[in-house]
Structures are given as C-alpha cells and as structure tokens.
Amino acid sequence: SQKIEQNSEALNIQEGKTATLTCNYTNYSPAYLQWYRQDPGRGPVFLLLIRENEKEKRKERLKVTFDTTLKQSLFHITASQPADSATYLCALVESNYQLIWGAGTKLIIKP
Amino acid sequence: DVKVTQSSRYLVKRTGEKVFLECVQDMDHENMFWYRQDPGLGLRLIYFSYDVKMKEKGDIPEGYSVSREKKERFSLILESASTNQTSMYLCASSLPTAPKAGPLQETQYFGPGTRLLVL
Image (cartoon, rainbow over all chains, first blue to last red; front, side):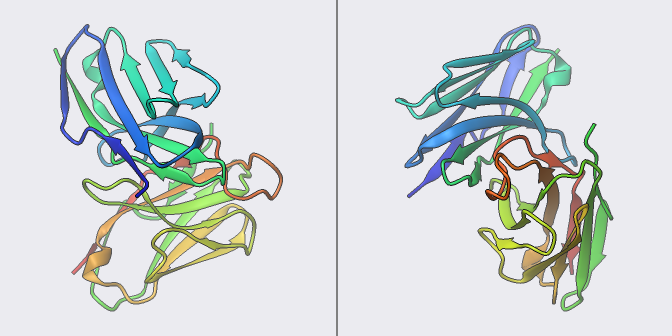
C-alpha cells in the first residue's frame, strides 16, 4: 500500500546541535516534496519545497535533501534553538497533483 | 502576506446538530481545501475546490459537504454531527500550478484551525 512515514516519536535535541528529521515514502513517485512547521493549536506553515530533480535545497538554517532512489527526504535544522521546537510535517506531491501528508515528527530543542 | 481565517477556534456541538465551519482567504486563490487532523494521523483531505461552485471529494468526504459560492469563501458542513467527527479542522488555500488544472501542488496556506468537539 502507499504510505508516507515520519518518525512518530518525539526527537529531543540539545540546543546548538543539528536536528535531522526523516520522511520516507513507498509506492509513490512524487513530483516534489514539501516541509511544513506546525505549532500547537495552529495550522501548518510552509517552509521548503524540493523538486524531484533537485538533490538539496537550503533556506537559512534549514536544509532539505531528496533521494528518489532511497525514497527519502531529510530535513535538517542547523544550530538548533528552543524556538525551533514544533511538529514538522512532510507532504509529497504526485504527478496527478494529489498532496499526501505525513503524520509529522515532534521536535524538542532543549536549552 | 496570505491570510486564511476560520470562523471559530473552538466549537462544542451535540450529536445530530448541523455544523457550519467557514473559511475565508484574502489572496484571490483559486484552490481551497478542508482537512481534518487527528493525533497520529496525517492531514486527511475532506473536500477541495478549484473554482467557485466547483468541489471535489477528497479521501474522507463521508458525513461532510461543502459550499463555494464566492472565491474567497469555502464552507464545510456537517449535516448531522457525530462523535467520530470530533477533530481539528484545517482550511487551506493555494494558487493553481496551471489554469484550471486541478488542486495546487505549490505552497498551501493554512488557517489557524477549528477544534470541534461533538458530545
């Protein structure tokens, strides 16, 4: 069956370290993949988009990679700060223009 | 900045009541979406609309209907609320990637969500 997986367990990272979140998918051929941030009681906010022909995308302290062979995207936050604590969602977009969402990974940055 | 607003942050309704959730966006986006979000599950698409008076079923349309009479407004209706419809409801809007091609793949802009409790 088709599915998109993110680590359901919270990720605890010490402030200043790099946080890496994983998004794995099976049985999809995504045209591109997006990452969103969601704070408690709020709607998701778009962070980055990476296309299937791009290996890496950066925005300030954020970096996303996309490996279509491994069927995996990694989301990195460098020099992490407590304010980065949130749930991070990945969503992939297939060629038929359907948006498929992961359940999200909760990231906790400890001071 | 795109702004998407939802009519209520919190709602408490009784089983069998008719419930209206309204969403308004101010960026002239063609596409609008209604999702529900439950713990441990990804966002699940209920309905979407890519134009005024147009609507398409998402993955879980049962028990819901929608209305898009104006471009900026997309309403979700629970005809007869049930306890299994207790959830966080999120509205989103976006631009299309190609004219009238269907739901958008580019950035989706979300409202703050409505947390609905059905007793």
